[in-house]
Image 1 (tube, helix red, strand yellow):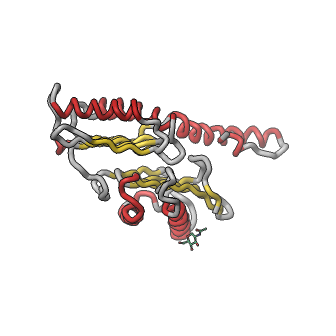
Image 2: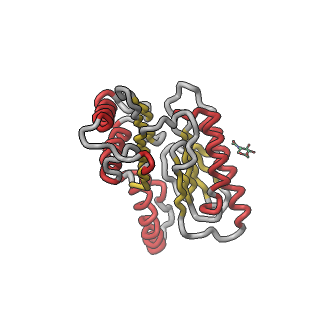
Image 3: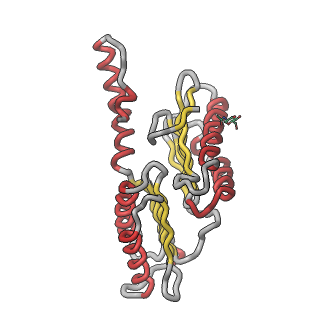
Length: 264
Ligand SMILES: *[C@@H]1O[C@H](CO)[C@@H](O)[C@H](O)[C@H]1NC(C)=O
């Protein structure tokens, strides 16, 4: 699949070998990202405190997480579940737009054990993987943009050449991909997710954006606008980067990292 993108048509054997060696490295990183669902980051909501073993909070959290496992087919890629008998407990799962169904279930299982292990007994916390994010919380933050829990990861290599031109290019690409995400029908399960690519002569840029379902179109747009400005020093001149948050995330790379990206 991903590897076929890189098959060279040159006939010079040495050339092919050299190109393949370099591209194998690239393919490895692409395939690994796609298939192993890499852990990215987590944060324990320390200010919410910890729950006591055997407490109502623990029981409710366990019940809700089991309920998601047993009643969801993960086809919507988004789960928000809260009941709590007299207390507030919320669990949010957002899978990446290309990773619904079994992939989403698998990411949920990984994220659930990952978050429990990294934030033991914390009432709240959030964890990001390549294909999903999972949040527990004892405070209702839904339907509003959360600007406290976000971070940026970028390639340490800088782009060569005109940095302003590069910045214009990735921001245009993100703009276009955001339009894809926002222009979907309300009943489309991949609403608020967009992936696209754009060729600029010597290279192609690949971009992806996604918001969690609860923030809606307006909130989604605001979330991107905020993060693009707030984190621009982190990735504006880098060979790839991403910003992850509770409400929205986006990513730009020089190689394809999600399937079905729209050519623009
Ligand atoms: C991409 O975004 C740019 C800048 O906002 C806009 O001028 C252009 O029409 C968009 N192209 C597509 C294909 O959406």
